[in-house]
Length: 369
Image 1 (cartoon, rainbow, N blue to C red):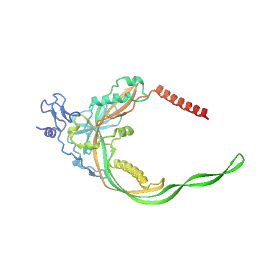
Image 2: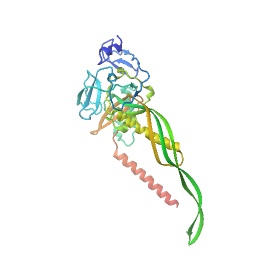
Image 3: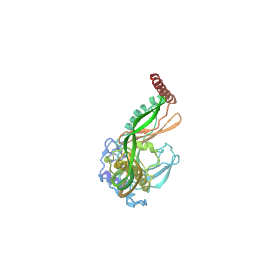
Image 4: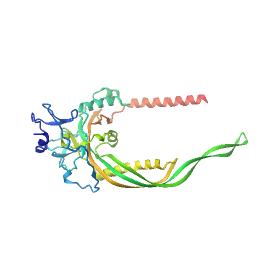
């Protein structure tokens, strides 16, 4: 019996055909691998090109797209409010976000299944090594922290994202300012005498302009999670989306999938804001000139489509001197982002060094006059 057939018969897991153990996704081989006997089973790619779906702003759910391919249950942490999806037969030992052992079952997960996924490329061991190198390069951290081995349990999480495509046509109107220069004759009093001199003066010539600007946007990436710190997630979100593959439940085996908490319409508003900012910058360049003022833009959006995707992240937290810190490792590239403790002594010495350099520069400048 194939792995696919067994997954359909037993939707809560992927048993090993050789020993009956549990098959989990292996980042190195990109296959399912038995944790006990080492047998590997390939994953069939049914959807090589992720499909785009027309955006429905009422956030209605199509029942056909709620089937994740294996039974899921939603759990919610009492401490931090994080929500994740895990196989129905599992119970969470601790929260994947804050490490709290208190989780509450939420029943069936009524969430749109992902359209595509980037499978984990970085193993847990590689993620831990990346964090170790990363923390040693941080500035202003205590030396004791750099040297010590941080005890933290890395959890593999698929974080939900929305991607949006759109065609835009913008009508704009603005005043364009061009710098011109002229020579003016002026007078001044020097030692009681009136002198005449010339000076080059810049002035701006303004004229109204208008036009249209067309632009297509592809795969505007918007986090669909409110659980993670926005700045950290933004730094981490440098994924190669060309490596997306069609969603298969086998990729989730051995990992946790976070349930999206940002709706499609909320995600679209965020994407639209980013598109508007990009259009404004490009239209200003299109107008040209040296300055632009009184710019007004009206943009029509069409052919708006979206995808729900999962991106791989190793998530962990650790305690240093009774304070909790969190970090994340990009499961595709190994990029690390997070918070680290700071050394007040190092910060104070750096500030003192900068002040010394500034005072020395002022002294040297004054001595040359």
